[in-house]
Length: 144
Length: 144
DNA sequence: CTAACTGCAAACGTTTTGCAACTTT
DNA sequence: AAAGTTGCAAAACGTTTGCAGTTAG
Image 1 (cartoon, rainbow over the protein chains, first blue to last red):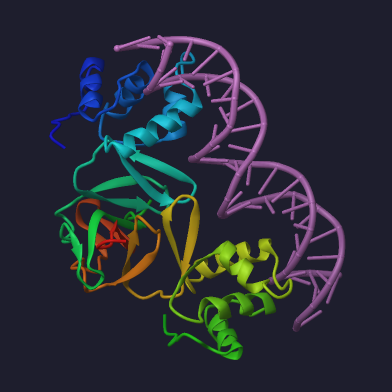
Image 2 (spheres, each protein chain N blue to C red):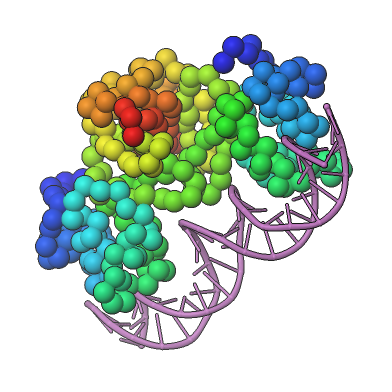
């Protein structure tokens, strides 16, 4: 977690980021990571696939899926499961939460300290170590 | 939410519960709800299907899926999505959270006030009404 | 030369759907 | 008869996998 990554990196920087996460920076992986880290965003596999192959076939479906799995594994991106029909990948891996607009499905970031839910590390009565905390809010905007 | 439902209801009581949620208590719906409310538990569709048809064909797959959707819709049960491969249905609809053991996949309840995450109703910077809060903890038990 | 990676196409598992048959009123 | 419900079988969906071919060290 020592990487000071920011959005809008050039491909060389993306390669560096991948290396720092023990990932061999191949052409396809760089393309995928480069897209993901353009900004703070939540993309799913088929959006990534479509965007990358918009102009010409650049990456295959299998590679997108496999690569995303590697990224999650190596903690380059955070996997978000809001509904069973689609996995989102969050370029922002720092402590924050999510609000889903039930009408539009749009995802909004909610800052970690805006909600007073402490960074947990242990659940007492289970005597269990917490590795991941995700707080998901679902609701409705004023008047859509 | 005025129903004072408890676990281990008889089928007549289950029918009553369904009626109070504006659900026509058909034979299949009663069977499904009766199973779900036997105790506080997290079941998924295929477990429900298998359990009900263990001795003889009682409910079809389509009906289990359709019924669960009705139940979620009418807030008889709470839908839990921890991973994209399976939806769990929680017979406990009151305020509480979940801990998933990453090694076993087992789901544990975490009481709402054990974690100091307030019952949210509004997200300030979004000016959005919160309809649902779910806090999911993933982690590991002492030594499995 | 070997190990890692990619991509095609087929498979997977859960969930959804169209539609005809059956209840219930 | 009309409305609601069920169940079969097929389809749909995102995702995963086997394997052959390619690339990189």
